[in-house]
Length: 331
Image 1 (cartoon, one colour):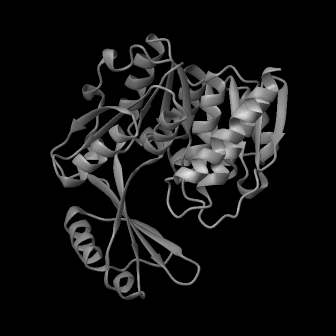
Image 2: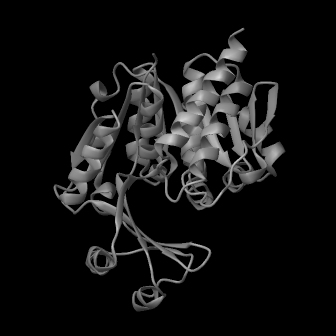
């Protein structure tokens, strides 16, 4: 089976359900916002959350995608940077428990974490991010042998802000013969790295995943026209339109992918898992439409749970649905 390597910010999600908004007020975190915090504040918040009770889930966009490809059965690897500490060891060991071959680099700072406050009747999420060692990863950390033997290389869009790192990574991946994919991750990352991203996609990237706001930031167009424009810059373009589904295009071939039925309670991780399903099906040699449908199936499972990790019953259902879909298209 074809293999995949991912690179991303190695962050551990620390989830806590708050009894009220006291902690949010204390640390000046507007409900529903995402704030970056320094190490001192990050440690204070973490210690405060421990008293409430927390759940630890290794995360980061590329890590979520690569964990899923590994569960699908693809040989999967991951490059990231952590601190030599409790959270770093947890991140590494959990990825390896899912079958991922990790290349974990060690930084001078403590491991990155994303503290997630779940509050109110609607389970609204507020984020406090401390990036830590994840931000210390640089081009000097990469070696050509890290990329050897992999068929796909998947990039987390948040890393594009580290332009020297990504420029080196795609060069090594291309020399190793990898098909390169990128998840654009955030419209503000696209806006602030527009020229670099255009050069990257034009010269190195084969498959682009974007949601409607990211696609608009890249092309200045609405979703359908944005997809068309993106498809001129890379081999395969994917634009996700949330609960309305997704669109895929390769050359003149276009498909609208209906959303798979789901009882959605939390959209976190939907894009990451969609990318995993799409890349898994692509590695199986499936038609473009089927790749999008497999992405849609697995994304529908993650929105039914809190957080980014799909439970075993839903994984069983997804694998069965995907097997049936692939079998129907092999006839």
